[in-house]
Length: 185
Picture (tube, one colour):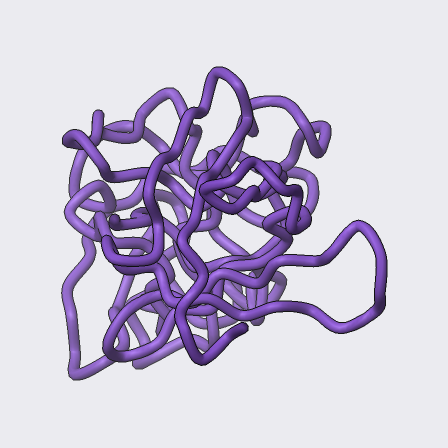
């Protein structure tokens, strides 16, 4: 059971229950050097898309821009944009999010899902009892953790996103069937 693509930042650029038009790809930091490079915190599993000629979008107004170059420098990346050749021209982009259009994202293998496909699914146990709604995905080092908000009560339920717990995901029915861990009972 693998959720892919983007860390859980609810900034999709579309209505909450529809397919998002934009998916977060990274967060721009500050400029680097004198040639128009910026530091970027990469928030996608597909950083190779930065080097393809698909265009990216910056900020809340989704300004379309072309990537001139991208490379990793440690845990962060360094990115350059067409038409922005000095640090001063990049100041408006400091701390802005960078987006891909969802239509440009690669198809996933069986049993792999983008986070936005899972958020909002109704979660039931194997006896069809409603547990709640999947509201958040926590990305951890070992495996993702799904946050389920119960229909009644105020305490979220955390479950590991592993095959022994996640029994079935049906995107068309907007349903996830789980086998709660023994320690959760």
